[in-house]
Amino acid sequence: MAIREGITTLCYLERDDNYLMLHRISKKNDINKDKWIGVGGHLEDNESPEECIKREIYEETGFNIELESLEYRAVITFVSEKGDYEMMNLFTAKAPDSEPKECDEGKLEWVPKAEVYNLNLWEGDKIFLRRLAESRKFFSMKLVYDKEDKLIEAFLDGRDLMK
Amino acid sequence: MAIREGITTLCYLERDDNYLMLHRISKKNDINKDKWIGVGGHLEDNESPEECIKREIYEETGFNIELESLEYRAVITFVSEKGDYEMMNLFTAKAPDSEPKECDEGKLEWVPKAEVYNLNLWEGDKIFLRRLAESRKFFSMKLVYDKEDKLIEAFLDGRDLMK
Image 1 (spheres, each protein chain N blue to C red):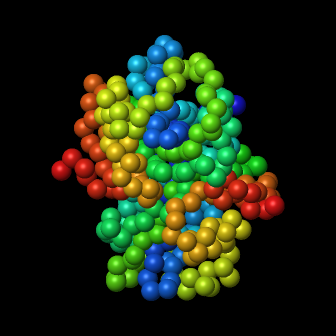
Image 2: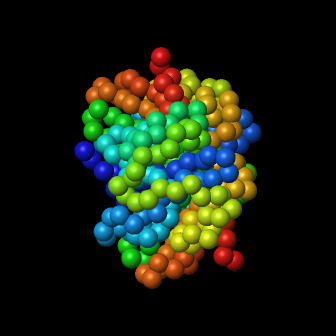
């Protein structure tokens, strides 16, 4: 199996007005340790973003997501002054009616969309979550973090959001 | 300078009803040798897709493209049974009124959109060029080539186009 270095997917599964959030408390040395994020992971072998996110959703929740319910919402470029670089393909999807299975990467919880901002999120995630709520138009975002994980730059479709 | 392995950008610059096409006749050992494509190239360092395509357009045409005229149209996953893998971020953009400078990667030519299909194109490029003409909605496409560069699989937003 080949991991596509620097290319990932993330999905916020939707049910009613909730997102399925993953509290990353299980893995040691997790870059997302103790943060709340969606489900997802690295592209493997020759996967497209859709193939990757369908596999990751299945592995982490047990849900077999229909293609029709999957929506490709954004590409997020993460840069860290620690040296990390990641191009993340961001999806939302309608969740099935069943409950997710236990996830070995953390604890899954349905959280009302309006309340996700109160969780321990990456600063930049709050920015793209707000954009997801405001518009269904595809967007591109670049988020730059310093060595202390502080967000220092944010661009939406190339426009500087911090000016 | 770090090249982001497997992540590229491509742009079809538009003027009236033409695309600016690049006939790749200049470089030896060019995977696109003798093919007609848009302008673009590999992501470098910590570039976002927009930053990369703006730089590539400037290097290959001399055009300084405004962000407002740039439109992020698709992500294309290329797989070749030769072992190549590429995630290509596809843009279109309104070209300025001036003429492009000479490009050292090939010959630039304005080609009416309806006539690009008569050029020596990759088979899969014809499919995404048709999709660009049909809809402005963002899409994801996966194109798989065999060892003889024959297109053997094509998916639009995860749906098999060859069935």
